[in-house]
Image (cartoon, rainbow over all chains, first blue to last red; front, top):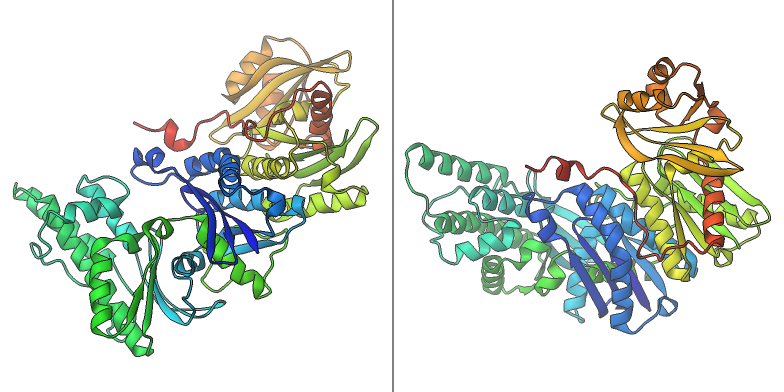
Length: 337
Length: 228
């Protein structure tokens, strides 16, 4: 079964064709990063304007690359939340019109469930259950994937998403947008033990995260230095900040896996590209006799292939959307409306 | 030639099917902006009640702007999707000229006014000549006082319509004595009015490819406008 999928929840316009939820036939991604860079973050109206202009081209590219026509496609998958509502509606409106024109099923997909499904594309043998750490610009969640349709949120950020903290700190350090890769690169040349930023572990028996306190600590440190007219080494700040985030993510994830007796851990979302996270989570998992999975960087960022994978599992489990499917900016994991 | 025209540029969601013989059907929903939920269902009903399927549509019409940015894109993304899936051409028409088409026998100037927020209006000026719509002012975004000053120089009866009336009708009537407000049932967007223009242009071969047709925002985004 070939599913053409569309993802426009933020600033990537992406179209993929995925076979049986596992095999990528094409995964075209048009990134608007350079357009939003000069504003220091994603501008929703500009993102939406670019989606509506680019999407038809990206669909054509995907068809061309896969040597398929729309007639060869068996269903249309589309992200319907969470995300920027105006941006979601572009993919959604187009997906509905194409599905209706072809007389093929329309399948709404939860963006975070899509991120998790990126692991199904990377590891053809991977089956639930497993625990997933989903970390991106908009999300920080620990999700137990019991089966293809049952997602249980065991922990979540109570304030900022991890990627949001990376963006903010990167901006104040003058390292640019997006913050994840910028901090990662600067940290390579910095000392992670230079500044003892706090590790916010909250209640040790729970698996929620908080990054706003850490963010404030970094800002206070920078302000203090400025008041005293002292120089700051941005690489040291980046490395120390990054270590404080990653340590917490690793501690919480491993503790959560242990508490439920889970031996398989996956990571998903843009922040799971972070080199220190991959390295430290890998070591911690090995020490505990656990297996760690994470997709290639291209499947960690927002992309339509992951939506196509999840759409397949929604469909074979009897989930088909109707023409009233709406974009829902705050769609909760495991829900559809 | 069957045309299907969509207008989601304002609070009104409206869809019409027209061909050379007749208006096959029209749907106007003037109640809450839930275009994303309602649009495809309205199209589906209209087609089936009209004894047609989406494959029977030869040209897709879209009211491309000005109007609500999100609304424009819902309609545009839908039309692009149809045209791409079915490999059919598209005709984009202005929200303001479509509104003017609501009152073809008006004996003066027609001035649609849309609420563009910030005390501004999306507006244009038109009149009918031998049954054809003629444009007297390009679609613009302007202060209401500037519009009144411009209209005063015309010295003609002016017919106002559009969703800017609740906000602007008082100043318009005061600024342009002798002008008229078009009654409620004719002063909102109707896809049949846009569809008449779509059909006319399609018959003349004035169509666009689905990759070329674009929303007509007039205004840049707020971020672009205020970029230092």
